[in-house]
Amino acid sequence: MTYFDRQNATSYVDVSVEPGIEVNKFLLATEEVVGIFRLLNATAFAPVISDMNGNIKKIRDKYNENPSATPTLQSIIQDERAKGQDTATVGMQWLFRGLCFTSDALRDSLSNPSHELAESFTKSYEGTLKPYHGFLVKGIFTVAMKACPYRKDFFLKLGPDVSVVEHKMEIWLQGLEKINGIMCGVYKVSSYRGPGDYP
Image (tube, rainbow, N blue to C red; front, side, top):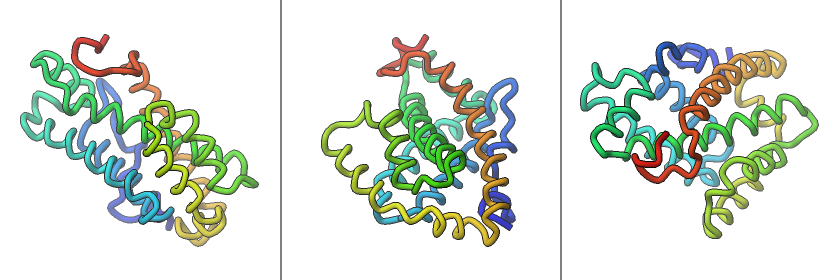
């Protein structure tokens, strides 16, 4: 048993992506990502955890307004655009920036077992979130990255058999990367600031 296949855990491979990314299972799977940051270092990554939880709430609140009208992430964006709103849309974009940060870091760690987590997460941060952060937030993330545990210790938190953890993480990552790829296509304008900027 690993973190990725424990009872009641929702994986990104469980999320339907046709005709769009289903909201409920996506949010449940993303809550599992928040759990990963708690395992990494709940104190150091508190800003990441808070930001992700806040954006999850924005999406869930929008979905709960009318679930039958917004069953997918794409339909939430379309609904907000039609109404001149953007709370969930912008929250979703920030959430996906965070998910790209997470997936790139874990992918680097899987592909390069000699890389410590601090190296993998720093490399990922520079290519994903850093361009969107101001000086203060960059400093917070720099401190958080340095507080990452050793790779071997973190992987043992995910499960007792590292080879099994790596296999399960690979499957989980493939599901997340697929969803990230779809949403990168949705958010063609990376500097999105409002409904009028959405393609």
